[in-house]
Image (cartoon, rainbow, N blue to C red; front, side, top):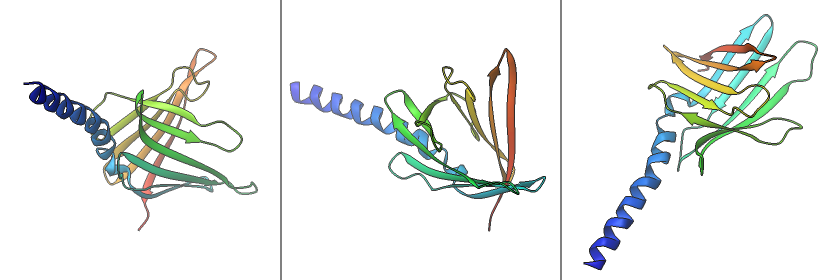
Length: 151
């Protein structure tokens, strides 16, 4: 009887640990290299396919007359849940936790962060839409991207 209970507990623990990794795997639609060109500014973002509950990403923005801005990202299973971590130059890594939502959309939130408080990815047909948003001085501020897949 004890063996059966131990086996059942192990099975439940394994299922609980698999769920968050599966939640990362559900974001596979983000994988690929994406780009947007708007007003002479080229923004690229690349996401690797999820493996073992982790997705790695990198972004680059080229604005005429400025040094390119490069950032790195990770989506992984953390104690708080599935977490998007932004790694920007000169700043400590900033975590945003996935909040429940609909298929084809991922909203990550960190209410304690100055800006943004939310990082949002959405399937837009064959494109990838990205948005950062948050409240600044009592007003909602946002930046949007509409990426086309690079072939």
